[in-house]
Each structure stands twice: as C-alpha cells, then as structure tokens.
Amino acid sequence: MGKNNKKKKEKILMPVWLNIIFTLGSKVILLFLTKIKHNRKALKNHKEGFLLLYNHYSNKDHFIIKDALNFRRVNYVVASSYLLTKPVGPILRMARAISKEQFKPDLVAIRKIKKSIDQKGIVAIAPTGQTTVDGNPSFMPDTIVKLIKLVKSDVVALKSKGSYLCFPKWRGSKRKCRIQTEFVTVLKKEELKTLSDQEIFERVYDAIYVSEDADQLTLKRVIKGKSLIQGLENIFTVCPKCNNRHSYISIGNKLICEKCKNEITMDKYGFLHPLKDSDICFDTVSKWLSWEKDFLGKEFINGYIYQEDVILKSNLKDPLKMEEIGSGKIILSKDEFKLVGKILDQDVEKVYKMEQIPQLPFDPGVRFEIPNEEMFLRAYPNDPKSVMDYVLIFDYLNDLKLIKENNHEN
Image (cartoon, rainbow, N blue to C red; front, top):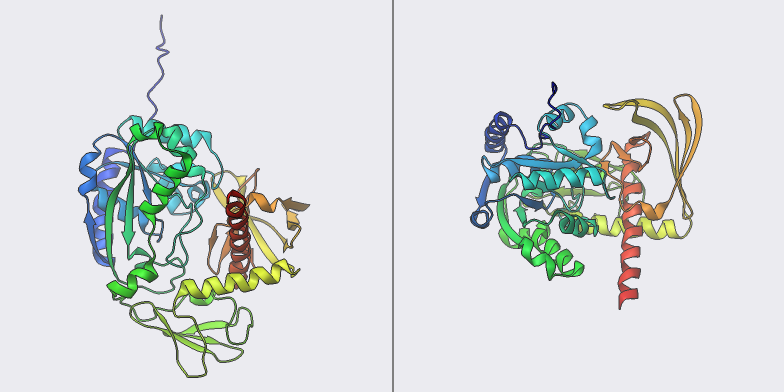
C-alpha cells in the first residue's frame, strides 16, 4: 500500500526537556526576586489532567505557577497577541502555549485545552483575561463557565497573595515582597452535572478572589525597594486636589503634581500618604483608581469626548510580527469608539461597537489594544498617560452594565 496514512498524534504538551529547563529557571528567577511559599496539599487529589485557574496579579505569574507545580507539565493559555511579542512570543510558541482570543469564544483554543487535559496535562488560564492594576480582582466574564462545561475536567485554582505587591503591573522599579500560594479544589468534573452556571461562576470567583489591600491591613508584608511609588504616575491620570490631567511625575519615592504641587509618598507596606498637611491623596491605589474611574466616567456620560493621536502597530504585514502600519486619531464618545487615519497608506475609518468591548488590554503608559476582527491592532498614544483614560472609561461602562443586569435580575 506504500504510504502510511495514519495521522500523527498532535503534540500538545510542553516538551519534557523544556519543562525541566522552565521549572528550574522559574525557581532560580523567583529565588532572586522574592521569598515564596507554596501550599500544595490540594494537588494530591488531582493526579489526572485538570484546568488550573489563577488570580492574574502580576506579569511573573507564569513563573509562580511553574514553581508551584514543580515538574508537572503545564500548558499556558495566553492572549494571542503575546505570541507576537519579542522575546516572549518565540518562547511561548516553543512551550506550546495555547493562544486564545481575549473575551470571546475560540474553538481552536478550546479543542487544544481539552486535548491537553485528556493527555493528563495541566492547562493554566486566568479567568479575568488580564493582569489586575490595583491588587483587586479584575472583571471576570462568564465565558469561563462555558469553557469549564466544554472541557469537562476537574478544576483547581492557584490563589497567590503578595504577587501584586511584588510585581504590580504599573511598577517602574524593582521590588521584593513575600508571596504565598495555595492550591484550592474548585470542583470535580462529576459535579458539573448538578451545578448551575451561577454556582460554577461563584465557585471560581471565590477560589481566586484576593484583595491585597485587605490582606495588607493585617498581614503587613514589607515591600523592599527604593522607589516603590514609581510607575503610578502612568495610572493616576487625575489629581484629586486640582483635578488636572496627566500632571503627576515621580521623583524617588514621591509623586508630585506639576500643576498644584500635591505630593504623595508610599510606605513600606504599599499604602499612600500625603507629604504635607495641605496635600490630598487616597491611602490605597485601588481607592484612587475607583475615584478616578468614577470621575472620568461621569464626565464621559455627560458628553465629554476623548480623542488622541496614535501610532498604530499590527501583524498585518507579517502574521508573526508586530510592526508599525500607520497612524491616526482615536475618538471615544457616548455614541461610538472610532479610529480615523491611515493604515498602509490607505485612508481608514473604523467604528467599533462599544458593547462588544468589555475591557481594553493595555500596558500602562505605553499602549492599549483595539479589539479588531481582521488583525491585532495596538494604539500608542502621543501622550502615553492617556492610555489609562480609555481603559477606565470602558471599565466604568462595564460596571454600569453589571449594575443594570443585577437590577434586572432582582
């Protein structure tokens, strides 16, 4: 008969050699960056493959997960755009990370997740989709429930405490802090037949819920570093004293408003303090951001239009590379979210449905991603501090949507 038509088994799990290197590398990296303690008791009850959920509180979570799992192989589910980012992208592809479109169903990703678990692998995914910016849980879409029901496996959570304090998304300098993790059984696959969607959602949320603010009030983890506050100038876009925008700069361990000279510092526990009696601030990052979101959101609802000139980068020219493809203006109003400009020397006007954008993936003080069907699209504003304005507006709208849904249910 000649040729063997038998299909080759698709390679899904991380290669053994790379797993060994990644495990040892993660342990060495964390040894130098932080003190970490793991509670692995719940792992003893899960010898087969399972879905591992985690609270995504830092950009070092993949190292923390690998260190906690020791030499058990894991496939990471990552946003598709990260596979295009150097040097992370090539490493993720080598590790057979599962790329997934954020905040929407991805059947290819779901198939790979199920296949990995069937091969006794562990698949790690963050239900919130992106890293928290304030040490509290980010918005969690209900798509995680659909994924759990499709995969039909045991579900375990890795709850980490202190990872945000050590590696906050906004940090601009090195920090060290104690981290603790604990594996928690969320549900056994046999329970899926009896649990409602709401019950599954609540179990997941409870298993990964961590408020670093609340923990710090009692645990008092010491954060070591010279300029602990550096980086917050990129997410504190409104001054609570004078209401001016994008006016904060960081000098040492101080934030200073260039307009009214409001000065703030951060103590060794991560709490904020005014430097003078006349200065005004909130005592935590989350309280400041909550006030700021409400301030910007109400202004937006009352008709304020946000617009910013941006540089555009995409994988349009090369599917595996992010390159500059044009420029334009982002316009955000009550009625629409619009991009007007040039892409590859062609005039474009793209209008996005705001109700279909639960969040804007972003890098503080750098860029945000625009959900787009035909390509990955990143916008780099001329004023990098404006990134947080757009992020908080969409968070505010999402909060309003949740309030309406809850009121409707009640």
